[in-house]
Amino acid sequence: MTIDQVLLSARARLAEAEFEPALREANLLLARTLECSEAQLVARGSDDLDNSRLARFLELLDRRLTGEPVAYILGEKEFFGRTFFVDRRVLIPRPETEHLVEVALDLGLPTEPRILDIGTGSGCLAVTLLAEMPGSRAVATDVSLAALRVAERNANRHGVFEKLDLVAADLASAVDLAGLQLVVSNPPYIGRDEVASLSPEITEFEPEAALFASPAGHSLLERLLATLSDLQSGTPLLLEIGAGQAESIAKAAESSAFILETVHPDLAGIERVVQLRRR
Image (tube, rainbow, N blue to C red; front, side, top):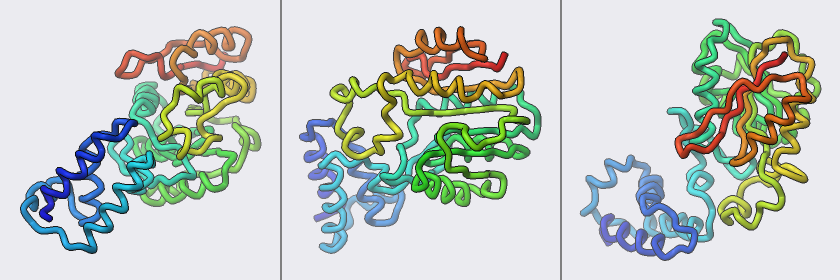
């Protein structure tokens, strides 16, 4: 079979999947199999695919058809223009989280800010901010040692490991909050009662601890505000939240050490990034 014929067949199989994967994923998986770019794959469309590589591609395609996310199959995901290593130890970086980075870069921080990333997972937030702000340093926490190993790998990949301290901790415990100029976090914010509404791609493959807050989606966010009460006055705090949680965070902020400054929507118009400041 030629590459074009293999792709046509693979797209037909993807189109039949109940979870509606993107047909382009056939190109991504075959390009990985052939160790070439998508553009090179298209240019080689009339080339024959040998049996060993066809078997390898079909193995990857079968994994995708079980619902396993492409990012885990490929072992990588792009975030803010950089490619991050990911596996099932960490949450897959989402495009909406890039808005948190954009907000952070627009804050007008000092030239050498010290940053805290709580619940770092793959490290995509801490690593990206360190790369975008050359004079910065960061501390990144996670309760999962396995996730911290992934973050370490990504910090090394993007040349910022020497500027990053990785700490195994619940939220910001064991972290000196003095001298921080920014705190960011994409914490678990999905409530257990929302499980039925989620795709099996998420619930069956991504780490449960990185997804779900208990008992409600905003519960951990409220605890996070209390944990950070020792921050210096004026320190900004940026949090990613779930749809419909802005009102709950606003109420929580009223009785906390933080002032809610604004809520930033994502490209879909969903309130996504909460910008607070220590009173």
